[in-house]
Image (cartoon, rainbow, N blue to C red; front, side, top):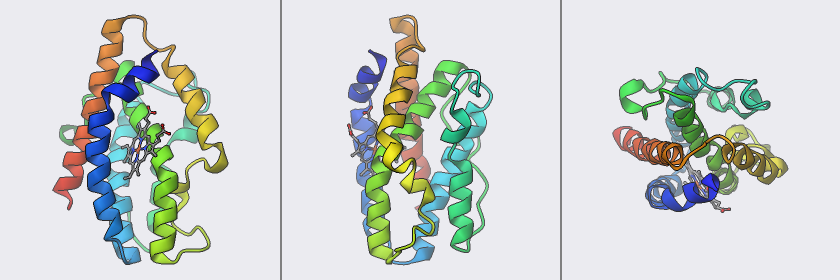
Length: 188
Ligand code: HEM
């Protein structure tokens, strides 16, 4: 199954990214620091979603609109007094030129909701946020996170028709993780 293969074959790039981000998150002490973290996600995921929109919409994935993250991120930034920065351009993004690469980028974005639950608890604790302010992106689908993840994986498992197509998705998911790490390093 593609979803299983993706988990295995992107483990390394996920772990490298996670290690770097966790280090940064632990150092967050103020709402300004946290807004900088949100900007990182807004600019990169926002750039990805602009590209994904060209290949995936409601016809391909019935709850696509609900799964987009750009607005929640912009909302969190604005709630905390920031202004969303310019989104990442093509050269900083993975290549998204077909629906398979679009699904690969979505795999990375949707998977981030699983780590998001941990991150939102961390941020609430470190910043003393007790009303959920600025945490809508990291809170993601709340109690529905697991169900949403399972249904996304079901879709993914029906997207490809050959091992060649599987490879396109896996390579592209790794590129999506790696470019995010590079983007984060560029905006340290
Ligand atoms: C920085 C802190 C992060 C932590 C602590 C974290 C942690 C986790 C955890 C606990 C899971 C669930 C594993 C499972 O239940 O099987 C997970 C899965 C995942 N995370 Fe992260 N994550 C982080 C960042 C990210 C980011 C920034 C992205 C994307 C850009 C991401 C993408 C994914 C993906 C795609 C999966 C799904 C793996 C699979 O089952 O196929 N994670 N992460």
